[in-house]
Amino acid sequence: MHGLRYDGEIEKAKRYAEEPERFRFDDFTVRFDGDNNGHIVTCAQGDLRCDCEFFSIRQVCSHTMALERLLHDMLPEPGHGLNELGVMTPGETSTRVSPRKLKV
Ligand SMILES: [Zn+2]
Image (cartoon, rainbow, N blue to C red; front, side, top):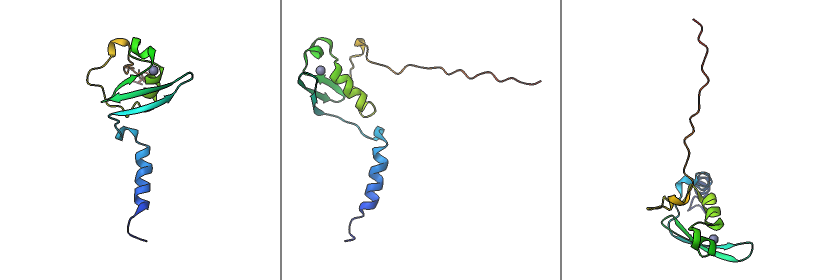
């Protein structure tokens, strides 16, 4: 059989799998196997929701945070965020270059 070139596809797949920023999850449902109970985390345009009690109070929980960690590059930015609740924002780190000694 020579019709389909799987080799090329496999090579591409390997490369793509190493570049998670290429992927964007939109809407999905995840069954989460928690320590005590199972939970269902849903995502709508990058907006994560969980059915657990903690989430209903805090709008964030260990389950959504775990998923954010796993998918951080692959989740789209939510249109209107929950940022007042302390969602992590990338901090600016100013790296100081050590001053070079100039010989005059
Ligand atoms: Zn939860």
